[in-house]
Length: 596
Image (cartoon, rainbow, N blue to C red):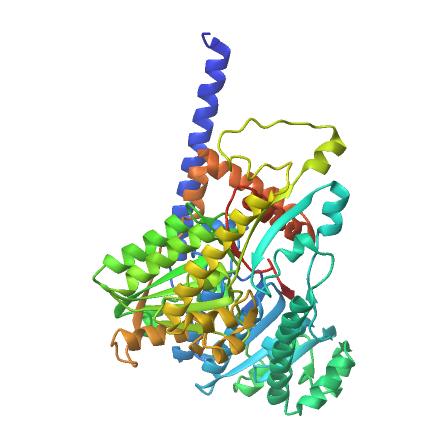
């Protein structure tokens, strides 16, 4: 049918408007970039103000247009870089660390503490300022020289709590039966669907995790504040604290407003009373290039970020900040780094609870191939468990923080049986099959004994023929030993090091140092970090919005982001169950194990 003249006119006008908007955005981006390239003037005796707040993902490209439209701004890698720059910058005499509510996990908190300690080794001081402090915020603040809390502020250092969700009650009410099989005594992700409470094994490793994390938390605060661990435990038990009570308990150095802190810093740095504090904001200091301070130059080391759930296809790095690991994207990045003769070593930064067994194996193979040509070092962030550990296992070295969540070597598979739900809503269906196992993943029937035997054989093959032997080979251990420390059990990085799953402690900077050693680059030489693959800019993502897959992801991400946190967690679990229904074996730990 011919298109009407009116419809043609509307289509042409719409196309012109879209083109004009895109051209305007491109011009705006170029304008911002041009102004952003001007390095700020940093005067002597300046103080750098850095913020620890928000989600703090591992890496976000320094994209002015993304920041203008409210995308995720600060990243952990950029924050740590500002510390490194300020340490080398003679014009910066101190740092004020403004700590607000942060989504960073415990391992990232330790990485920030490491950056603070490294900066303080130069003889310069770090001042922590908070208006409100929870466990993690105070843990970061305790690494600083002095801690300031706003007079109306409070400290909620109430101790650690692990929150584990179970959906069996909801599934029963909906008439959905979770027909699931899992390998590993401690592989508890299936319990999320099949139980209403923790199993004894599940409770055992949760308590073990909490004990390890809490003891380290107490010891770090005790050391920082000149107290005994018992005194800190008593302080925690009596929390929360007002600013004045926190000062009386020795948790902070002063209850002060921000301008009062600035006045104290001026006095310590030799300013006159009439002088204005030379304060440099972190957003401004970003424009000081590392190269101008003698950093980030020399031999090239590739840094590949693997963040989020693991699946097949392309990685996702959406404008809203959602990230996922695509096996095609990460495998290609590893291949490109392997074949680039100018790259001397590879650091794979992993922050993932796992995902698809197939996708994890493809990335594992790419790591194994890259290792044949040059050193590969894994840097574990907050979580590198199950599939996240699978892709790490064959690296030459594994570096993790003591609080990193790792291990969870186990496999789960199965399907949701929807018959009760369909009966409830009045839906019926019939299957016409060809082949004895054609109905194995029918969503209205439980596995038959023969089908369940096939499922168990398949899951056992994944665990005993793939996961365990490949971890054993990568770690230089006997498969029987890996099976014993595996069994789906989740470990902290500290426990993982004791078990031989981790080589040493540290963050990304330490992993870079280890990669330098393995590549025979002198320890006192700087290296240039090459990010592979370089994430798309905000504008590139907008230009690709016409892609149906991209549009669908953005729409899904927008809806997902609008939901309450617990609802988002529940939907991620439901998505996991949906993946299992399609016949995928899953290498996952309990998603978003929250310890606050």
